[in-house]
Length: 357
Image (cartoon, rainbow, N blue to C red; front, side, top):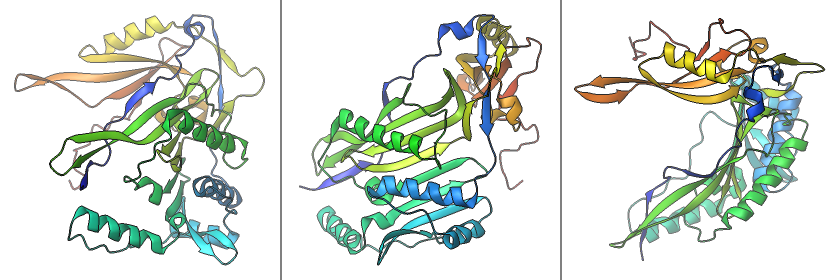
């Protein structure tokens, strides 16, 4: 029977929601913790150690930190970025700097689905599957991505470990990330984890479409206390076979500010929601609760103060039909009701929508 991968990835459906912000943080007079962002770029030694930790998790066995000369070459290829690939070596696997582009095996696509699948299996069997592990560290954008291509591309396996075992795999990976000095962040916690299933649809020749799980996706918002950091999270994808497919970390390292690092809330959440609705009368307003606006400001000191966040969805009309504009986010001070809000993405009145102009 021929099978066809109709949709590589369907829209994901959440089956566990993140924990809500405690109600006591919304009352006037509440003490809100200040965050401390460690935004300095990591040293080459820390970059090498972080790459080794992520590669070890995806490979399922220990991979040493990248050698100093390898890290130097990786950082020299592109400023503020380092990309590594895993290679087999006489003494075991080791990290090497990734070339600008790697050509994959050429597969003849003529023939039946069964014949093409057999050619793909033969091509992938030539090399160690772990050699398709790549680790990218974007130091300027505070983003890390580790991907196991051989696992992420597997849509033929029949095994499915189920959500409970997938959660155990995720918990073990998160514990390793928390324990490792190169990747640890005080704001990363398994509390409030969001779980999604990435679905895959298949169709036998002339038969009905069958939908099954491709992977389980776990997202941990980075937070200080019960207050999330806007735009900062750790995302771990567990393939249905139980192997880690990818790890993505966005946002700088964050923790609670030292002794007495707190502010007193002077403006209620209800008052700020009324302000948001008054300032955006033709938009749908979605309250998000308290957030540290790290992504909305270039100032770590400004981002350290929690603000009340709202999603703004502009609404209009085109050809007699209602349309929604691009969503944006506004962050209002909870200390000063007259302070101007932070806005993300930052508006650009001169934008044309076409970079060629």
